[in-house]
Image (cartoon, rainbow, N blue to C red; front, side, top):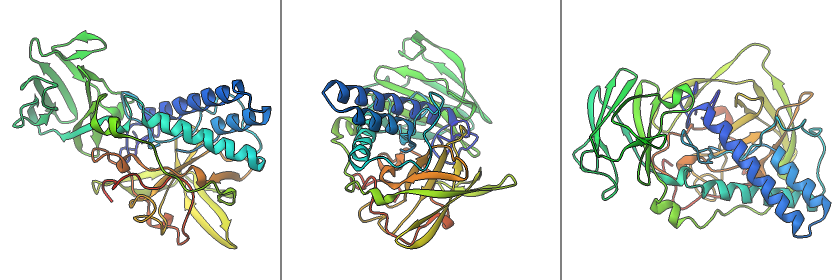
Length: 374
């Protein structure tokens, strides 16, 4: 995953990007929800609709940003629609919105989620993930290179990525067109996503940057004109069901605790877990171990019997606002697909065994296409 700072998924590298990424994703999604709310207000919606939209902006949920999960940023998109909580103090955790207001809130959240996936730098723009060998790695459109860029969008040989341990240095060919921060570049050290925001290189509609996942050093490639982005027609979701918005008990771990989280590459990292959320549904009690988003909000990586049929086979993500007074709202209507549901080039975390619910969660996003990695 990544974030601590990013658990966006790096101190946590198992998931999907560095921490800074998820933070930017949540902020971007919150801004999109705010715009949606303002538009609704100008269209003549009642003041209650504005409150519902604001609630969506202040509510957690939905990346990998998702940019997915999550929203697009140079470092890593984020699939998570959680908002920027520094703007104002959150409302009392137990306060339940009216039914009409709640439906508007979820509609606003879904609109923001859709916008984040359509971002020209989001998860749908990923077109490649290549693991570097020690030493020189040639990159360009030549299929014999180590990092193969899309044909017609790069020279056959654009340059060399030289890896020494966890350090990567770019040596671009003169006239290759490779740029960094809007200026041509021929040689420079490339900071990976594990240290916050990575150094992003651009070549036409392509962008690429270095990622660290455990001991592996890779290059992630995006194309703002990717076929997957052009083909995106939106997401399907279960009907809004207020019964799946639950006020859970938050059981804080008195001592620092980590839980092993394995990603789709089979790599396992021990991730910080601030506590466990315990909730009731249908007269039964369930619990989920939470991960720390690094800003007080929680991330839940869970599985349930709908996986592989109605929902993505490898599970879903869910973000919450910070717990208050031992309680936290867990809104499964905001459960969202991890980045791996949209691309084969993400490295998403998988639900730990204790987060595999025996009850079908018929709420939140349904699976997108055939998905990847599960």
